[in-house]
Amino acid sequence: MLVIRPLQENDLDALYAMAQGAGKGLTTLPADRALLARKIQHARETFNQRCAPEAGLYLFALEDTELKRCVGISGIQARVGLDEVFYNYRLSVTVNASRELDVHVRTPTLHLSNDMTGTTEVCSLLLSSSHRGGGTGLLLSRCRFMFLDDFRSHFSEKVFAEMRGVSDSNGQSPLWDALGSKFFDMEFSEADMLSGLGNKSFIAELMPKYPIYLPMLPDAARAVIGRVHENTEPALKMLQAEGFNFNGMVDIFDGGPAVEAFIHSIRTVREGINRHVMIRKKPLVTDVPAEQQVMISNRSFRDFRVTTIPAECIGLDTVSIPADVAEALEVESGDLVRLAPLKDTGRR
Image (cartoon, rainbow, N blue to C red; front, side, top):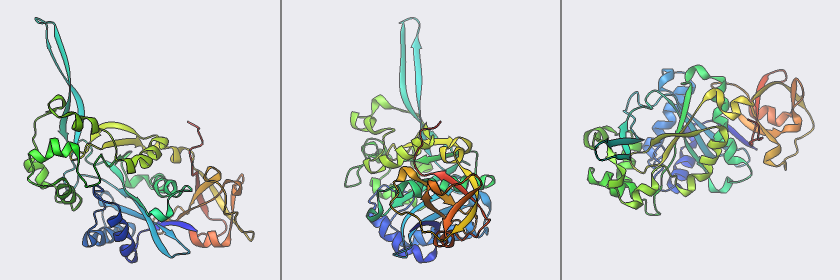
Protein backbone atom coordinates (compact mmCIF):
# COMPACT_ATOMS: atom_id res chain seq x y z
CA MET A 1 0.00 0.00 0.00
CA LEU A 2 1.13 3.56 -0.74
CA VAL A 3 0.30 6.09 1.96
CA ILE A 4 0.93 9.83 2.23
CA ARG A 5 2.02 11.00 5.69
CA PRO A 6 4.10 13.82 7.22
CA LEU A 7 7.83 13.48 6.62
CA GLN A 8 9.76 12.07 9.61
CA GLU A 9 13.35 12.22 10.85
CA ASN A 10 13.97 8.59 9.81
CA ASP A 11 13.17 9.50 6.17
CA LEU A 12 16.44 11.44 5.84
CA ASP A 13 18.45 8.66 4.15
CA ALA A 14 15.76 8.00 1.53
CA LEU A 15 15.25 11.72 0.91
CA TYR A 16 18.97 12.33 0.48
CA ALA A 17 19.24 9.44 -2.00
CA MET A 18 16.32 10.82 -4.06
CA ALA A 19 17.82 14.33 -4.02
CA GLN A 20 21.15 12.94 -5.27
CA GLY A 21 19.38 11.17 -8.13
CA ALA A 22 17.35 14.24 -9.13
CA GLY A 23 20.31 16.02 -10.71
CA LYS A 24 20.95 19.75 -10.71
CA GLY A 25 18.25 22.39 -10.88
CA LEU A 26 15.84 21.16 -8.18
CA THR A 27 16.32 24.22 -5.98
CA THR A 28 14.10 23.32 -3.03
CA LEU A 29 15.69 19.87 -2.51
CA PRO A 30 19.45 20.18 -3.04
CA ALA A 31 21.53 17.11 -2.26
CA ASP A 32 22.79 18.57 1.02
CA ARG A 33 22.23 16.23 3.94
CA ALA A 34 22.46 18.90 6.64
CA LEU A 35 19.97 21.15 4.83
CA LEU A 36 17.53 18.29 4.28
CA ALA A 37 17.74 17.43 7.98
CA ARG A 38 16.88 21.05 8.82
CA LYS A 39 13.94 20.97 6.43
CA ILE A 40 12.62 17.80 8.08
CA GLN A 41 12.96 19.44 11.50
CA HIS A 42 11.14 22.53 10.25
CA ALA A 43 8.35 20.34 8.88
CA ARG A 44 8.05 18.47 12.18
CA GLU A 45 7.72 21.76 14.06
CA THR A 46 5.09 22.89 11.56
CA PHE A 47 2.90 19.79 11.89
CA ASN A 48 3.26 19.95 15.68
CA GLN A 49 2.21 23.63 15.52
CA ARG A 50 5.36 24.87 17.19
CA CYS A 51 5.93 27.66 14.66
CA ALA A 52 3.85 30.56 13.35
CA PRO A 53 1.37 29.49 10.62
CA GLU A 54 2.90 31.86 8.06
CA ALA A 55 6.33 30.27 8.64
CA GLY A 56 5.07 26.73 8.09
CA LEU A 57 6.76 24.16 5.85
CA TYR A 58 4.62 21.09 5.17
CA LEU A 59 6.55 18.14 3.75
CA PHE A 60 4.65 14.95 2.88
CA ALA A 61 6.26 11.55 2.44
CA LEU A 62 4.93 8.81 0.17
CA GLU A 63 5.53 5.59 2.07
CA ASP A 64 5.54 2.13 0.54
CA THR A 65 4.16 0.21 3.50
CA GLU A 66 5.58 -3.10 2.26
CA LEU A 67 9.10 -1.68 1.95
CA LYS A 68 8.55 0.54 5.02
CA ARG A 69 10.40 3.28 3.17
CA CYS A 70 9.77 6.78 1.86
CA VAL A 71 9.69 6.69 -1.95
CA GLY A 72 8.52 10.22 -2.70
CA ILE A 73 8.08 13.69 -1.27
CA SER A 74 5.97 16.78 -1.93
CA GLY A 75 5.55 19.99 0.00
CA ILE A 76 3.78 23.25 0.75
CA GLN A 77 5.52 26.47 1.83
CA ALA A 78 2.89 28.45 3.76
CA ARG A 79 4.27 31.86 2.71
CA VAL A 80 7.30 32.70 0.57
CA GLY A 81 9.51 35.75 0.91
CA LEU A 82 8.91 36.55 4.59
CA ASP A 83 12.39 35.61 5.87
CA GLU A 84 14.40 35.60 2.64
CA VAL A 85 13.32 37.88 -0.21
CA PHE A 86 11.68 35.86 -2.99
CA TYR A 87 12.66 36.93 -6.52
CA ASN A 88 11.17 36.32 -9.94
CA TYR A 89 11.32 37.99 -13.28
CA ARG A 90 7.99 39.36 -14.45
CA LEU A 91 7.60 38.90 -18.20
CA SER A 92 5.94 41.98 -19.66
CA VAL A 93 5.94 44.29 -22.68
CA THR A 94 7.51 47.74 -22.94
CA VAL A 95 5.93 49.96 -25.59
CA ASN A 96 7.81 52.79 -27.32
CA ALA A 97 6.19 54.94 -29.99
CA SER A 98 6.98 57.93 -32.15
CA ARG A 99 4.01 59.67 -33.79
CA GLU A 100 6.34 61.72 -35.96
CA LEU A 101 8.06 58.65 -37.42
CA ASP A 102 4.91 56.52 -37.27
CA VAL A 103 6.79 53.86 -35.27
CA HIS A 104 5.17 51.69 -32.59
CA VAL A 105 7.48 49.12 -30.98
CA ARG A 106 6.46 46.45 -28.46
CA THR A 107 9.49 44.95 -26.73
CA PRO A 108 9.23 41.87 -24.45
CA THR A 109 10.95 42.70 -21.17
CA LEU A 110 11.96 41.06 -17.89
CA HIS A 111 11.46 43.04 -14.66
CA LEU A 112 12.93 41.89 -11.32
CA SER A 113 9.94 41.33 -9.03
CA ASN A 114 8.93 40.37 -5.49
CA ASP A 115 5.24 40.07 -6.40
CA MET A 116 4.85 36.53 -5.01
CA THR A 117 5.87 37.56 -1.47
CA GLY A 118 3.38 36.24 1.08
CA THR A 119 1.88 33.67 -1.32
CA THR A 120 1.61 29.93 -0.65
CA GLU A 121 3.85 27.71 -2.78
CA VAL A 122 3.42 24.03 -3.62
CA CYS A 123 6.94 22.70 -4.01
CA SER A 124 9.50 19.92 -3.57
CA LEU A 125 7.84 17.24 -5.70
CA LEU A 126 10.18 14.28 -6.07
CA LEU A 127 9.33 10.64 -6.76
CA SER A 128 11.66 7.65 -6.79
CA SER A 129 12.09 6.17 -10.28
CA SER A 130 11.10 2.75 -8.90
CA HIS A 131 7.55 3.95 -8.17
CA ARG A 132 6.67 6.06 -11.20
CA GLY A 133 3.53 5.24 -13.14
CA GLY A 134 0.10 3.94 -12.17
CA GLY A 135 -1.06 7.29 -10.78
CA THR A 136 1.57 7.46 -8.02
CA GLY A 137 2.79 10.87 -9.12
CA LEU A 138 -0.80 12.13 -9.15
CA LEU A 139 -1.30 11.00 -5.57
CA LEU A 140 1.95 12.63 -4.45
CA SER A 141 1.08 15.94 -6.09
CA ARG A 142 -2.66 16.16 -5.46
CA CYS A 143 -2.62 15.09 -1.81
CA ARG A 144 -1.39 18.64 -1.10
CA PHE A 145 -4.61 20.15 -2.40
CA MET A 146 -6.66 18.03 0.00
CA PHE A 147 -4.57 19.45 2.85
CA LEU A 148 -4.93 23.01 1.54
CA ASP A 149 -8.69 22.52 1.32
CA ASP A 150 -9.13 21.38 4.92
CA PHE A 151 -6.76 23.93 6.49
CA ARG A 152 -7.25 27.04 4.36
CA SER A 153 -6.70 29.44 7.27
CA HIS A 154 -3.00 28.50 7.26
CA PHE A 155 -2.47 29.53 3.64
CA SER A 156 -3.03 32.38 1.19
CA GLU A 157 -6.06 32.28 -1.11
CA LYS A 158 -3.76 32.03 -4.13
CA VAL A 159 -1.26 29.19 -4.54
CA PHE A 160 1.61 28.97 -7.01
CA ALA A 161 4.28 26.53 -8.15
CA GLU A 162 7.67 27.45 -9.58
CA MET A 163 8.61 24.95 -12.27
CA ARG A 164 12.13 23.79 -13.05
CA GLY A 165 13.45 25.48 -16.20
CA VAL A 166 15.50 24.17 -19.10
CA SER A 167 19.06 23.00 -18.46
CA ASP A 168 21.25 20.36 -20.08
CA SER A 169 22.62 17.12 -18.63
CA ASN A 170 25.57 19.04 -17.18
CA GLY A 171 23.28 21.49 -15.41
CA GLN A 172 24.00 24.37 -17.80
CA SER A 173 21.16 26.83 -18.39
CA PRO A 174 20.96 28.89 -21.63
CA LEU A 175 19.34 31.80 -19.77
CA TRP A 176 21.99 31.73 -17.06
CA ASP A 177 24.78 31.65 -19.64
CA ALA A 178 23.32 34.69 -21.42
CA LEU A 179 22.24 36.73 -18.39
CA GLY A 180 23.01 35.57 -14.86
CA SER A 181 26.63 34.64 -15.55
CA LYS A 182 27.30 38.26 -16.57
CA PHE A 183 26.54 39.49 -13.05
CA PHE A 184 27.49 36.53 -10.84
CA ASP A 185 31.03 35.19 -10.76
CA MET A 186 29.90 31.59 -10.33
CA GLU A 187 28.43 28.63 -12.22
CA PHE A 188 24.68 28.15 -12.60
CA SER A 189 24.74 25.07 -10.34
CA GLU A 190 26.50 27.03 -7.59
CA ALA A 191 24.05 29.95 -7.75
CA ASP A 192 21.10 27.55 -7.77
CA MET A 193 22.54 25.67 -4.81
CA LEU A 194 23.05 28.89 -2.82
CA SER A 195 19.47 29.88 -3.54
CA GLY A 196 18.24 26.48 -2.37
CA LEU A 197 20.29 26.80 0.81
CA GLY A 198 18.49 30.06 1.57
CA ASN A 199 21.46 32.34 0.89
CA LYS A 200 19.58 34.75 -1.40
CA SER A 201 21.01 38.10 -0.36
CA PHE A 202 23.56 37.86 -3.19
CA ILE A 203 20.68 38.12 -5.69
CA ALA A 204 19.66 41.55 -4.43
CA GLU A 205 23.27 42.66 -4.22
CA LEU A 206 24.37 41.59 -7.70
CA MET A 207 21.31 41.29 -9.95
CA PRO A 208 20.58 44.31 -12.20
CA LYS A 209 17.55 46.30 -11.07
CA TYR A 210 16.81 47.65 -14.53
CA PRO A 211 14.55 45.91 -17.10
CA ILE A 212 16.12 43.27 -19.34
CA TYR A 213 15.12 43.69 -23.01
CA LEU A 214 14.76 40.19 -24.47
CA PRO A 215 15.85 41.10 -28.04
CA MET A 216 19.29 41.79 -26.55
CA LEU A 217 19.60 38.15 -25.46
CA PRO A 218 20.69 35.34 -27.82
CA ASP A 219 18.05 33.13 -29.43
CA ALA A 220 18.96 30.15 -27.23
CA ALA A 221 18.23 32.13 -24.06
CA ARG A 222 14.97 33.65 -25.31
CA ALA A 223 13.75 30.21 -26.43
CA VAL A 224 13.78 28.75 -22.90
CA ILE A 225 12.02 31.58 -21.06
CA GLY A 226 8.75 30.20 -19.70
CA ARG A 227 9.62 26.60 -20.65
CA VAL A 228 10.09 23.66 -18.28
CA HIS A 229 12.76 20.98 -18.07
CA GLU A 230 11.71 17.79 -19.87
CA ASN A 231 11.64 15.91 -16.55
CA THR A 232 9.22 18.52 -15.19
CA GLU A 233 6.68 18.32 -18.01
CA PRO A 234 4.52 15.65 -16.27
CA ALA A 235 4.36 17.79 -13.10
CA LEU A 236 3.33 20.82 -15.15
CA LYS A 237 0.58 18.86 -16.91
CA MET A 238 -0.74 17.66 -13.55
CA LEU A 239 -0.96 21.24 -12.28
CA GLN A 240 -2.60 22.45 -15.48
CA ALA A 241 -5.23 19.72 -15.12
CA GLU A 242 -5.88 21.08 -11.62
CA GLY A 243 -6.52 24.56 -13.03
CA PHE A 244 -3.10 26.17 -12.62
CA ASN A 245 -2.09 28.71 -15.29
CA PHE A 246 1.09 30.61 -16.17
CA ASN A 247 1.13 33.90 -14.24
CA GLY A 248 3.81 35.73 -16.23
CA MET A 249 6.57 35.09 -13.67
CA VAL A 250 9.74 33.15 -14.50
CA ASP A 251 12.72 31.99 -12.47
CA ILE A 252 15.61 34.46 -12.49
CA PHE A 253 18.20 31.73 -13.06
CA ASP A 254 16.77 29.26 -15.59
CA GLY A 255 13.59 31.00 -16.81
CA GLY A 256 11.23 28.25 -15.64
CA PRO A 257 7.58 29.40 -15.42
CA ALA A 258 5.47 29.95 -12.32
CA VAL A 259 1.86 28.74 -12.45
CA GLU A 260 -0.90 29.70 -10.04
CA ALA A 261 -4.51 29.06 -9.01
CA PHE A 262 -6.91 30.08 -6.25
CA ILE A 263 -7.53 27.29 -3.74
CA HIS A 264 -11.30 27.31 -4.28
CA SER A 265 -10.82 26.80 -8.04
CA ILE A 266 -8.42 23.82 -7.83
CA ARG A 267 -10.03 20.70 -9.34
CA THR A 268 -9.28 18.43 -6.35
CA VAL A 269 -10.87 20.99 -4.03
CA ARG A 270 -13.94 21.54 -6.24
CA GLU A 271 -14.62 17.84 -6.71
CA GLY A 272 -13.95 16.75 -3.13
CA ILE A 273 -16.70 15.18 -1.01
CA ASN A 274 -17.02 14.09 2.62
CA ARG A 275 -18.18 10.65 3.76
CA HIS A 276 -18.34 8.71 7.02
CA VAL A 277 -16.15 5.62 7.34
CA MET A 278 -17.67 2.16 7.38
CA ILE A 279 -15.15 -0.64 7.97
CA ARG A 280 -15.72 -3.94 6.18
CA LYS A 281 -14.02 -7.33 6.18
CA LYS A 282 -13.79 -7.77 2.41
CA PRO A 283 -10.36 -6.69 1.05
CA LEU A 284 -9.99 -4.08 -1.68
CA VAL A 285 -9.42 -4.93 -5.31
CA THR A 286 -5.84 -3.80 -5.91
CA ASP A 287 -5.56 -3.77 -9.70
CA VAL A 288 -8.02 -0.90 -10.32
CA PRO A 289 -6.92 1.58 -13.04
CA ALA A 290 -6.01 5.09 -11.87
CA GLU A 291 -9.10 6.45 -13.66
CA GLN A 292 -11.30 4.45 -11.26
CA GLN A 293 -9.45 5.35 -8.07
CA VAL A 294 -10.14 8.12 -5.57
CA MET A 295 -7.92 9.67 -2.93
CA ILE A 296 -9.10 9.37 0.66
CA SER A 297 -7.82 11.67 3.41
CA ASN A 298 -8.26 11.37 7.19
CA ARG A 299 -8.47 15.21 7.42
CA SER A 300 -6.02 15.26 10.34
CA PHE A 301 -3.60 18.17 10.64
CA ARG A 302 -0.84 16.63 12.75
CA ASP A 303 -1.22 13.05 11.49
CA PHE A 304 -2.36 13.70 7.91
CA ARG A 305 -2.84 10.50 5.90
CA VAL A 306 -3.95 9.89 2.30
CA THR A 307 -4.16 6.73 0.20
CA THR A 308 -6.27 5.54 -2.74
CA ILE A 309 -9.29 3.25 -2.96
CA PRO A 310 -11.63 2.18 -5.80
CA ALA A 311 -14.36 4.72 -6.51
CA GLU A 312 -16.96 1.93 -6.14
CA CYS A 313 -16.38 2.02 -2.35
CA ILE A 314 -18.22 5.35 -2.10
CA GLY A 315 -21.88 5.32 -1.06
CA LEU A 316 -24.41 8.11 -0.59
CA ASP A 317 -23.36 8.84 2.99
CA THR A 318 -20.51 6.44 3.71
CA VAL A 319 -17.32 5.05 2.25
CA SER A 320 -16.60 1.36 2.77
CA ILE A 321 -12.97 0.45 3.46
CA PRO A 322 -11.25 -2.67 4.86
CA ALA A 323 -9.56 -2.71 8.25
CA ASP A 324 -6.00 -2.45 6.88
CA VAL A 325 -6.84 0.75 4.97
CA ALA A 326 -8.55 2.18 8.05
CA GLU A 327 -5.46 1.36 10.10
CA ALA A 328 -3.17 3.00 7.53
CA LEU A 329 -5.35 6.13 7.57
CA GLU A 330 -5.67 6.01 11.38
CA VAL A 331 -9.47 6.25 11.21
CA GLU A 332 -12.34 4.35 12.83
CA SER A 333 -15.94 3.63 11.86
CA GLY A 334 -17.98 6.82 11.85
CA ASP A 335 -15.02 9.17 11.25
CA LEU A 336 -15.50 11.81 8.56
CA VAL A 337 -13.03 11.54 5.67
CA ARG A 338 -12.46 13.54 2.46
CA LEU A 339 -12.46 11.99 -1.01
CA ALA A 340 -11.46 13.34 -4.43
CA PRO A 341 -10.81 11.74 -7.85
CA LEU A 342 -7.22 10.71 -8.48
CA LYS A 343 -7.38 11.57 -12.19
CA ASP A 344 -9.08 14.38 -14.06
CA THR A 345 -12.73 13.47 -14.68
CA GLY A 346 -13.13 16.06 -17.42
CA ARG A 347 -15.64 18.11 -15.42
CA ARG A 348 -15.14 21.87 -15.16
